[in-house]
Length: 490
Image (cartoon, rainbow, N blue to C red; front, side, top):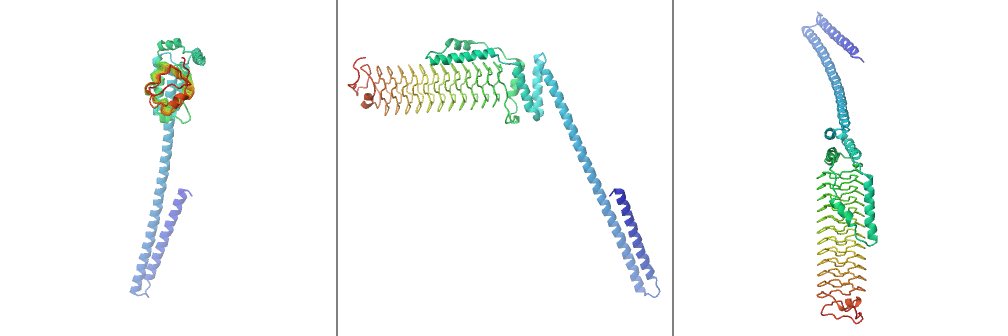
């Protein structure tokens, strides 16, 4: 019912009420004028008339007040609805203005990314960073734009990638033939000069590295595959879960950076600085880390299968449980590093420095440790079956309960080593130096001891010597005589 019809109905009701009240009043006053009535009855009728009139008019006033109160409430409700609609329209207009502003800033910055001047492109990159900060809903879109900018403007040269594959192939083919490492190539990498990174590319990497990680979608990764970002400044940047497969980060500064969960398979990090870098559970399969600085790095559980770490420095690095199958660690420095539980099967550790390293329960089956330094290292429970330890320094190392079945320890130096319950079944200890070593419960069955120095050995018993194979050149402790079945020539 419309408001006009409601007002007309109310007016009619008020009029009828007034007429009804007046009629009753007139009737009561008329009755009070009858002469036959007593004065008391006349007064009574008049009082009733006045009371009735008052009641009728009070009821009319209450109806009038209730009606207009309802009208005011209705008006206020209409006003609130109108205000809400105006607010909604205002929000829509604000969103439209915001979208228009984003679009304008987007288009302006993107247009400048292709500008010929590097300073203009750099400014556009920082403008996009500001958009990402002001409008979080556009954060990931901008990160994808910046990573695409790096990929398009700093692509890696495929020729270099092919040369890298050839180099890796040369390393492992020479290893299979029992040859030494290709020193000229390594030396070339040591003195190779890297080009300076472009200013705009560096700016894009800086913005990406300091982004708000909380705005990253859980199912998305930064795509920086096959990019040439040599000598990039990535100090303390956050590149978690980034896809850096085949990227060239040679000479890059990655100190304190977070690369946890990154995929760096086939990447080049020659002479890069990764001091205290986080690479927890990262994949470095086939990566080239030749001469890189990896001191105090966290590579716990990382995949370094077939990686090239020749000449790299890994002092006090955490490689616990890492996969280093067939990795090249020639001349690498691993002093005080934690390699407990790591897999170093068939790894090349020629000339590596492993003094005081933790190699507890480490798998070193078939590993090449020729000329390595393991002085004071903890190799308790390690698996060194068929490992090569020619001329290896193992001074005062802990080899308790280690397995060295068929290991080659020719001319190795094990002075003062702890060989408690170690297994040397069919191992080669020819001309090795074991002065002062602890042989308590060690297994020397079929061990070659020709020319071996055992003077001053501790807890070495006659039955252990009888199980071994020696000759008159074997130097035994004073309290043990050479078994009669040993050959008398040599």
